[in-house]
Length: 632
Image 1 (cartoon, rainbow, N blue to C red):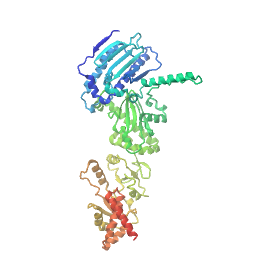
Image 2 (image 1 turned 90 degrees about the vertical axis):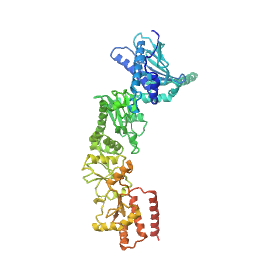
Image 3 (image 1 turned 120 degrees about the vertical axis):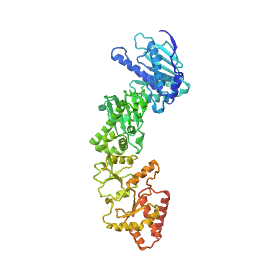
Image 4 (image 1 turned 135 degrees about the horizontal axis):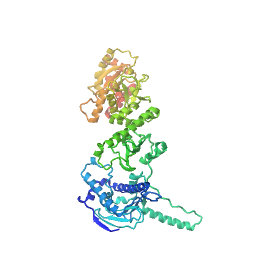
């Protein structure tokens, strides 16, 4: 072979420093590019063998990444197809370089929104992001091929000479630059390889030269010790193990056990809380897609917001949560998908408008909806058991995707205060669906519905305010949600309290001024009803006012009703209220009137909402004063 020297033809000055700067936060991709190339080299040779165009015997196809910290090098070896001198010139000096140049011309100056998914296509020259010198030693599979050595210090000038390697395949040796020395740390390098190549379909080995030298020295000592003691059996050296494994998604669904799914979940996310259930995706048409999506168990109602979907390309990791491929609500789950048909060397803005990618997103959504409805129809008891964990995901999906809602709407259930899980239809033929959003705070109101047969839904999640409005919008005139403290319904009234409408109105009017005074609320409305409660009074807040309050909190005060827009309902059946009425009708205004009214109002407020610090202090002091009066 002839020796060669030369420079890569280039019109863009300092292309590598520019690429390096543009991708400064993603330097890891050099490793993914060069190991992916090694995997391709093996795949090409295996293909040639399968069609009878190559005759090679190999006991194990493998890639080795060797770290020599002392020498400051990382070497990547594959026993794949190798290259001749002509192929080195073609693929390294011309094609690989043009890929880097095209990359730069296409993406230089783009904003973060136009980031390239995965950056596949940058190619071999990405190694110059971390190296100040690169060497290639390669030998082609072709019979009689000579080994070739290629090296470049800058990426601009190169030299080609004969190589001394006798192995078929390719060695790429990176002399790590001063500003990238972190890659000479064995832990970082191993973890970076695991991040991208945990599921590479070809065995990948990591070799720490320093560690191997230590092991060799220890083995030699052990051998010497062994020679001194003939009775001990010789210790076999431990065979190296690949750092990658086969992903569960390539295995047929029928052959996967529950324990395998759980173990794979632990491997992916280092989460030792078992997932609730999973969806195994295995799609061959109209596109190739495999993966597993897990529904995680929540520690709190906010945990699900931290889901992760890992995206792979031919079993090589690309990114987490690629929103152009997956609907936003699916990212509340955990899992992995592998899509070899995905166009990865394009911008995110392209993916957003790509019909093919949209089909992938739609198909995955359909599979998730089918799983949920199938479980609801065939395993309803199990489905309801999972509802507390999965309902934030289902509700968010309905809010974000109407097609998803249309598919799962029959599988939406509501947990009741009795612990049942009922569909919208099963909630009963009621004028309104009553609900609570705070089990403790609204307990007094729930007690008034006892023995009424009315089902009360528990809607205490962060999405529920939006979700009930959405359901009302989707069912105009048919569905209405009302919180239990919005009004006094017939079910809350005491049938034994025989008071006329006029009597109740007189009681309310008689006491209104006193309650406005003790509450400090000029807008306070006062009513009287005979209700099924030991409480002397309760506070009400209309559903409309409550929702407008929520909007005011969310968007800032915009003149919406405030928490002063409440109604105090005096319990006409209560002895304390009856005593208050007698005092008022006698005209004997006294300190007792203010004391009783203040205590009645604060008890009602305490049962309705948390009290401010000052109000709570006054309530406690007044309670102590009342105790003193009782014991006098």
